[in-house]
Amino acid sequence: MNLTKDIQTKFSKLKINSWCELSLMLPHSYEDLTLKNTIDMGKAQLIDASVESVFRSPNTIQITFYAHNLGHTINGVLFRPKPYMMHQFKVGERDYFYGVIDCKVGNCSMSMPRKISTIGSITPKYKSTLRSDVMLRLVQNNLTLELLKSEGLKEEVAQEILKLHFPTTMINLKELDKKSIDALKYLELFIYMKLLASKRRYFEPLVRVDATYDDWTSSLPFKLTKEQMLTIKDIKNDFAKDVASKRMIVGDVGSGKTMVILASAYMMRKSYSILMAPTTLLANQLFEEAQKYLPNMTTILVTNKTKKIDLSEYDFIIGTHALLYRELPSAGLVMVDEQHRFGTQQRNMLEKLVSSKEKKPHFLQFSATPIPRTQAMIETAHIDVSLITTTPFKKDITSEVIHKNDFSELLERIKKEIAKNNQVLLVYPLVEQSEVLEYQSIDEARGYWEKNFDDVYVTHGKDKHKEEVLLEFREKGSLLIATTVVEVGISLPRLSTVVIVGAERLGLSTLHQLRGRVSRTGLKGYCYLYTNQSSSDRLDEFVKTTSGFDIANLDLKFRKSGDLLRGSSQSGSQFKWIDLALDEDVVRAVKKDLI
Image (cartoon, rainbow, N blue to C red; front, side, top):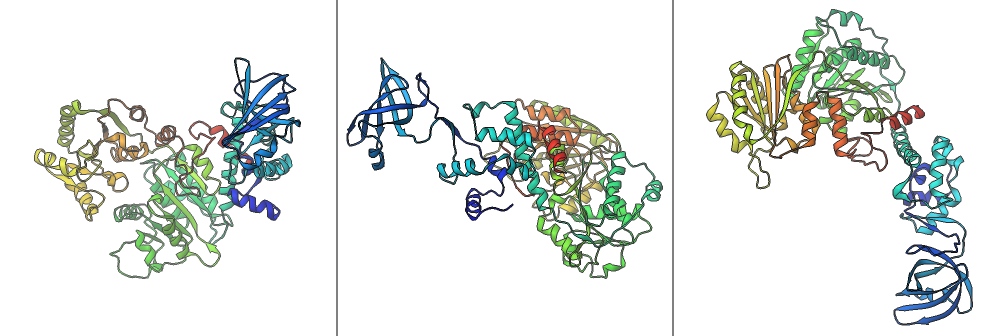
């Protein structure tokens, strides 16, 4: 896009980079500079008038006009006039003036009249970092259908947007018609997705692999789900391309992402695969699964405690962030599990460690936080996305909102579960007592549970020994008291019940992650949301829904698309026009047009 220096400067002041972005900067109001022969009470309008008299006092200028178009005398008043205003009104001269007209008992007045040089049109008024007249000229002299089309915007959208900048009738911006709103939604998303796509960079892969996986999947003691298979096929196709792939695999809790990780390592078995997990526990679990289902591959677990050894002797290297401080072989595949638990810098560091000049490894990120379908479609502009929305077996979890008067009944249920050798998790909002919060903290509550139950374990985010506590609880515990530290991580096969205290304080996706801790092996599960609120639509909707992807859409609905693409190019961005909870068809249309 060739811009003159003057326009580049203006774009820079407006913090925009394209004509499409300029077109999204709508007027904040319009002035009707057409002549009418009736008074529109209380509204600004144009008069064709002769100045009959001018009276100056210290704080006002009072002018008597004769408005020819209205056949009426009008008294104009300027309050606290600036010096230049004095020269606008000369007795005997006929000109066009603009201001708000009001009439009382036959006397009409115009407040703050001003002289107008161009008439006969409806003129937009802009509020921006540019002066309003400069902004108006920028739009009126430059914004055209051809320019918007040259940036890829489709004609019908561009025409609809231009009507808002070049109106032929007055427009009420608070009551735009559906056509205009749809065009604005499309334009807003088009600009955003185009920006994301421009950030995507392509590199040559360190290795291209035309892999097969049928022999491996058929050797498994269970059948993979259709979506697991489709995701593995996506990855197989990625590995065969001549660009290093970047793909995010988003799967609900218990959807079987581990098998996709193992399938990916299997397909890359002739080169190295590296997997980074956020905790030692998780890395250890993945290592155990790899040993079980990839018996013909040499696998190693790397943590802070692992001795310095030559990692190039292993096909599949699994570790924590300790991997970032080791000498790693140039790997064909890098994977990051629970990617949101690592900073962008850490993820990039791992990729760089195994890259070779301009060549990069294939890069897979796994996330157990389901995202709305609309967001997944948007993300595909800068990274490929696979969604695993089903689970290998249907979990049987009963979810219920409970209150103070349900406590004795809850206690009975907890005792029953422990009697069956099942485990119970109690999640408290805080570790220590708070003046502000009306719920007990772990410190306040633990005494009661430790007195009334055996084998009670306690941990939280600041606990240096939390991994050891969780491991010991898994083997010996009955009741675990914790904060949301257990949201992601260790598998607890005997956990059947979770009680979340102050549930209304947590996001729906966090509640879903916590609920996903129970019933991992087909046990009958229970999730109790304890709240002091008499009613909560959010929690009532949550207990009716079991799919993480439906929860993500609910979350979106309740928080109105707030922090949309966390960790992406516009952290915490808020769309003004598009509502991702409702406008899936718009997202689909923009995605289709951008491909």
